[in-house]
Image (tube, rainbow, N blue to C red; front, side, top):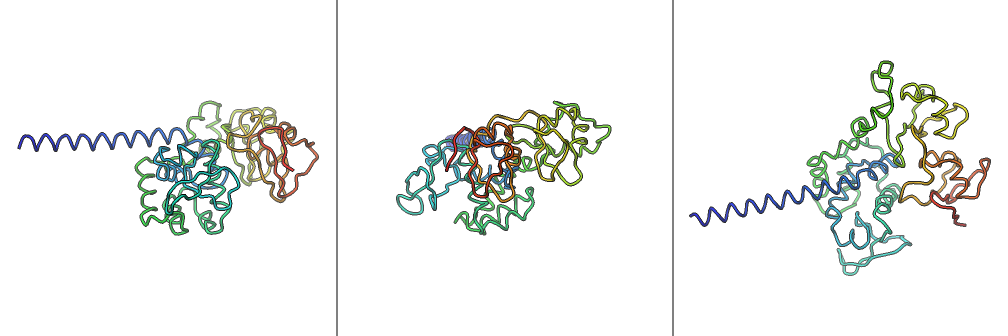
Length: 308
């Protein structure tokens, strides 16, 4: 009896240890990749909670063969891929998977994969906070063959409270206090709750009715300085643009190398989209401020090279 009790206790302790190790791996993975997940959400609309949960599930918290050898965290196969590849057995023997130079490229390509395929289009009609709808929609669209795929994603999100990263007012509290918000005049935190980070710079994505003057006043930044941060010498503003609350970077965040121009986009639009200094973006592409990029053109975001 004593031996059986000892064995049972040992098995329970072992199970607890395994669960704790798995929890620790998840939390380390989340800390490492939450910023890129949030940036991709702000750029494309894919909930950060969904991307993080998929990364945890698909890559075993970054420990899978594919993640370790190909920086592929989402199990995306070659399909129409023209970059480096990695071969391994999966549903079939010796299948072809996409290989990336660094982990961040995998996260960016995951977003491009979902946004560029019509079968996932209905997901982008859902709210960014509807993680259950996204999880079920991914399964319905055929992202994975596992019949329990949606519920597994939902369980990870709820166990790790990943849904908090889908809500700007909660995930960006670290920025509150770094600048002197006029809470007396903006008691409902109309602007502070909308702060997002692009290229690791705090910014606000504008809505109808916003103005540089109102944002400057709410954030305790002089109008002159706010305009300088955003490469502006006048106060015209567009709905949907990023207004940066700090100095923009010389190049895009890691993982972003080129931008494919959409109809109607200007070089200034692209600079604001990625948080790059306008003059630097022009330098990288041997362009002048008056030049207009053409739809389909590839614009370099990180270095002074140009594809022709």
